[in-house]
Image 1 (cartoon, one colour):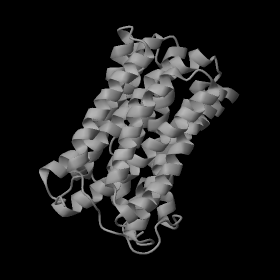
Image 2 (cartoon, one colour):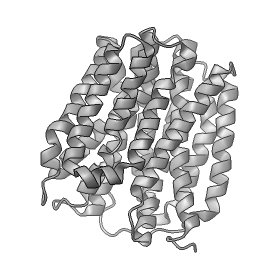
Image 3 (spheres, one colour):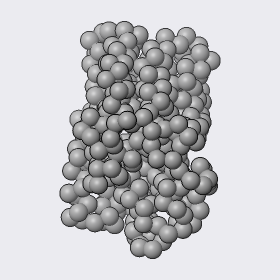
Image 4 (tube, one colour):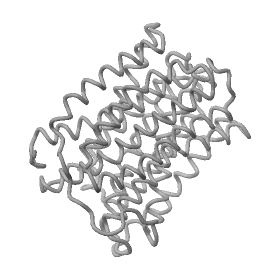
Length: 379
C-alpha cells in the first residue's frame, strides 16, 4: 500500500482536483450551444441545470458513506472516468429529456469525485503534517481555467461541440490513467454516524459555504449567457468570463495562505466578499466587454479564499465533531454550486438574468455581514 506522505500520492491528489475542475468547466462554454440547439427558454434551462445538481448531490451523499467503507480511490476513479465518458453526451443531446439524463449522470460523476478527492486530500494532508489543502483546491481552480480555455479555444477555431468535447475527454482519460496507481488504496475508517444534519454555528458556516459556491456555479452556468445577452461578446467567446474568473480564483488561492497570514480570517472574509459584490456590480453595469471581463476578475479574486477560511473555521467550532461538521459543510457547499444555479434560471424567467445576478450580489453580502460571527473563537 502506498504511503500517504509520498510525492506521487500528493501528485495524484492534485490531478484528481485538476480533472474535477477541468471537467465541470468544459460544460460552461457548451451552455449557450445547448440552449440554441434545443430552443429552450431560461426557465427550462434552469430545470435542466437542476438535473446536474440532483445527480451530483445524490452521488455526494452516497460517496461519503461508501468511501468510509471502501476508501476514496475507487470513487475518485469512477468520478473522473465518468466525467470523461459523459461529457460528449452534453454536446449531442437532441432533446430536453436527453440532455436532462446526460446532465444527471454527468453530475453524478462530478459529485463522486468531489467528495472522494476531498476525503483523500484530508488523509494526505494529515500524513504530511503540513498544510496542503489550499494547494489542492488551487488545482481545482487551475482545472477550471484550463477546461474553459481549452473548450473556448476549440470552439473559437470552429471545431464543432462534439469534436471539442472528445478532445477534452481524451485529456481527462489520460490524467486518470496516470492517477490510478498512485492513489491510496484505503483511507482511515470513520467511527460513529456517517452523516448528520448540521446544527449550531455549523448551520451558519454551511449557509455561507452554499452562498459562496452558488456564486461559482452561477458564473459557470450563466456568466456566458449574461455577457452574450448584453451584446458584449459573441457566443463562441462567451466562456471568456469564466476563464478570467478561474484565473483570478487560482491566483488568489495560490497566494491565499500569505494573504490570510497578513490580514487574518475575519478581514479576508469581510474584504474578499465585499470585493466579490463590487465585481458583480462592474459586470452588470459594464458598457463594454473589457469592463465586464474586469468584473469577472474581481469576483474571482474576492471569492478565492472564502471557502478555505470557512473550512478552517469548521475545525475550530465546538458544537459538532470536526469530521462530521466538515462532511456536512462539504455537501451543503457543493449543493450550492450545483443546485443553486437552477434558482438563477427561475429568477431570470420571472424577472431577468441581470436581476438574478443582482440577487447573487445581495447574497454575498451575507458573508460580509457574518465575518465577525464566523471568526469568533469557541463557537
